[in-house]
Length: 479
Image 1 (cartoon, rainbow, N blue to C red):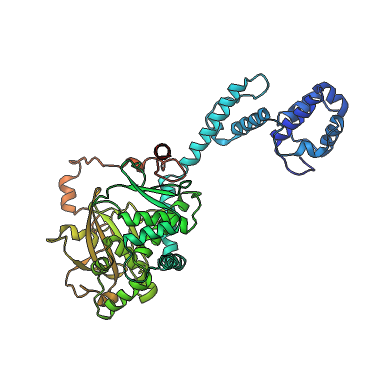
Image 2 (cartoon, helix red, strand yellow):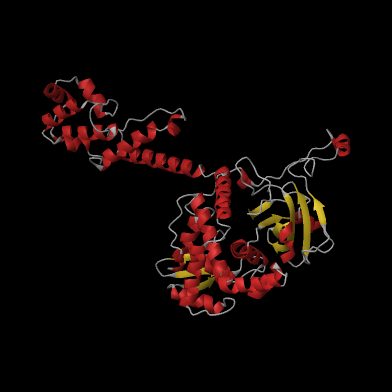
């Protein structure tokens, strides 16, 4: 209104109509009382005209109600609330882009039809909101998270403190965390663990918050997640007091924090730092030894090393997990190495240089033994140690690298294996040699393999990728 506080015109119109009808007044009678044409009052009641405060005061006086009653934001009845929702939905740009006519939610519209229309609009709005979480949104969230991790050298002091507090609560005094210790932690937090064979395929675990029961897969595959880590990641959400994620970026951050928490329990900071300190003094830092000392996977040990190396020893590092087809699945760096990236800054899904150790290991004579390599790049020379892990999705190389001057602290730092990478120059490994182009140009037709998830929105639901119906049916079976 021109001289009054801003209010929702549709709700105002519904409240005015409700008050008029409750007084058994027609538009004509109200128009005579306030000196305004019935057509003008009708536009106000339909939310299509913004009335002046003086007109509203006259209407309130004629109806015998306080002006504030007309300005309240609540719908005067459930039916009126549905009509307000319908009007708002039909005024949205998303509905307008469909080119469909508007439906008037007056008394002639049956209640069930009104309910159905509003329900359809709500579902359309929900789907459109979910589809805003596209792969591009996911890539941007990944890129921003990597920036945040780099700024803190991938060291989360508050999570280290939380993990240390949990270990003290179960009187864990030395060495790696045992299965008995994990059971004690779960009990300390008020949870019991239950291993089942019908866990929904889209989940790593399901937690019954009422019964305080955590359901886990009954048999751990040799090519799946470490069952201890899965338990600790789940418990981490509760120790770190994660609410339901508000968006994909929030979900991703929580996932990283829960993973960090699990690693900080499996490889406690004080013991891990002491182990690495002694190895550094001997110039024999090795991810293999770090892994074996704490009984974790190579990838967990490599991740944990990146948590501690820069903060405690001043060693800048980078980490990659690269599929055998050369595509980056995970990566982190604080040592200046230049990963391939798209226009959003995301590196996940990008092909890594064929000359990097993450790729050359797959062509080595003995790829499953210790593998070390120096790589000269446009941003400097880096030394890398690489290990191959087999999974149900194929083989992945897990790499930890550091600038040339820090290689002296590592076993294998004296390797003679060396390559030269000129990426992002396309002539390095993206552009084929001219002889091959001349021979095959116009005579080859490759058909690209594209994963369907690259062309679709992220899966629906608060937790991306989780099939909510499967989870609820699973819990219902257990109730």
